[in-house]
Picture: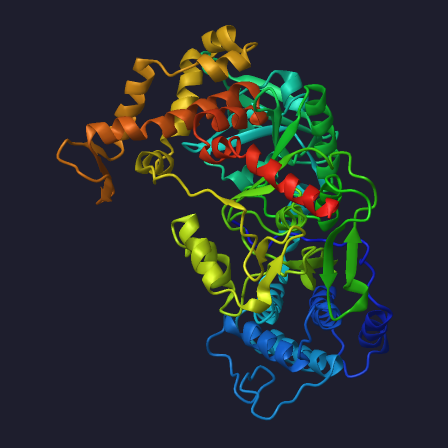
Length: 628
């Protein structure tokens, strides 16, 4: 999981006046500067100065310019290519025995001297842009883990993901055995309109072989401006001749709702993968569709949702509450970043019974939604303890189209709790903290609660205890099922994906003819044949599965998995269920994966469906309070 997720407050785009004055002073007055004629170097130096200024002016905590400068210099010299370059006693000297830096101007002047010394004295041609990036990354190191530098190429990709659309050919793909394999063509996109379909292998792009491409190579080759063309050569299973397609790129929507459908006659289900620019619009459309199917209650699945735009999370939360309800607050040393968000309208779904699913991958915006639902006893939060990201970032663009993301405030749930987990032990430990939790969700939460100080204990509207300092603790805990070693072996060796791909190659036409207009029947009636099941087990055998009745406990040893026959039968259910869901995705599209996975293997969804009496109990508690 990428734990450095976007949290953006769009209205804080313009830097304060003092920032403009400082930058003007540094770049217009020319005081204390050595002239650099090369525009490339001018951009590097300007970039360095802007980063320092934005951190000082906007970070949620007071930051020492001395500390920023020292860290940046350590980073700047850490990867110098010329190992023989004299450093001691030069502007590159990082011993700082008698250096005190007390202003942005002094910091910039000293860094500029170091920059020019390296540029002019190194016997090796240094990549000065990379050295400045080293300095900037080091500048961020002592700050919170969500304040980061983003390279230009990464900035563009992230912007695409969170704008809700990009321009390209419109396929979902995997690189399997060094070959680009189409998983599905996005509905009504340019590839879909040309008849490109799941199972197709793209072996040429613009007349050149694409075999061996990385996923980034594929993205770089197939994405491009709307209206431009790209020629692809496709090998289709069952067809002996190369198929040539000229695809005109178009705008492709990126949906943030993975799935929305009726779990049963009463229960709607919506899974949201992140909060991007279009999320609330997609959510509203999905809710309207489910209501037309007589939905009476909703399961909102935020598992694995890392957050995104604060505004979109707030708008979704508003939909479940009456006007005026406190939803979330942001707190900062800067008044401009301190706000309280209340419901601005009567939410259209404020009376619908609600369950929210969360896990350790639910962060930021997901914790805003689930925190408000829990604090107001509006619904039941079910699953495992969430990630614990309670910091809000603002993004600032730099002169070379790179960006920095700076934490500008902390957010508080309606009860006043801060759910941010500790991060003073370093960024790596912070990111991987979720993997060090107790294997049992119940054990993890019991341990967490034992260590929560009284100052981080709060109460919901109805008086239930909730806790700050480490994510949202669910109302109903769902432990992971027993580890399925067979599934681990399958995923480790990519057996499931290749099995489904080859199944479509061999039987795709017959399968589509029988099932393509009968998805609901597929959900309930389709099972893998004995031949398919045996073929799958044989592939597992070829990749390290050893079945023996002498095995008492399933275990890995020397890259082999040892199981007994009875353990094999017990563990096959989950891999076969995942492959059935993957088959659905490749035949019908991505949104059809989750109905099948929920049917076949998702224990948390099955558990949630039994918890509506607890939701009703919450409502009764609130109604009892209102009658007092």
